Image (tube, rainbow, N blue to C red; front, side):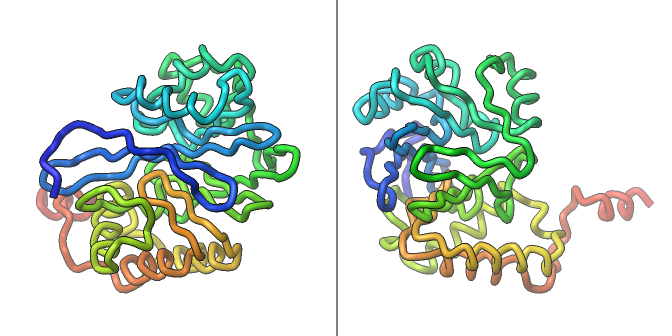
Length: 268
């Protein structure tokens, strides 16, 4: 288990047929660490998905510029406005004059509250798609998340699914792909991280969550891109099964002392 407290930028690599992942690893003392990924598609209208950690600003920008001339970058898709996903947004907007930020109404509102430039937002209304010339990115709400503005997508050409925070996992060390992670390590890491990042899963409608997982399987993605997991190729069934087994069974019997019911009981 890593004891270093500093985030590490890792080598850029392929992520499915025509995406690239700009991966980083954030050590979490006593817990292992967490992948922090951004993704790049270098097509007719290049799109960057999320902008990495501010603490890795120079290294992140250097990795991105090794892949693409920032003057050509057309879109920056924000999964949501948490710090680990927008850490270099202002810096990139200053260096990528043609880029527009893709988000929804709430995402734009949060950008404004953070003092970020909303003048270059491409607002996605419900039902909109982002056309990239040879493909579309179809927005979708991942099965679980930690911010209500979260938007994932399915790439209609490569069948890459961007799942935002869904399927993130705490891992003992960096990995290049899900295939190299031992199954129990993946299961434990996924369950632990989802407990932290989406604690509402403990009280979620399990039938509704199960339907969402089944719908993801029907989409049949070839590659799963998660903000907090190494790239998963060869389908989504392994990941959906882990989430289903963890959260679509009977509610846990453990008592959350901060739950409203527990507080009401404690205060009589």
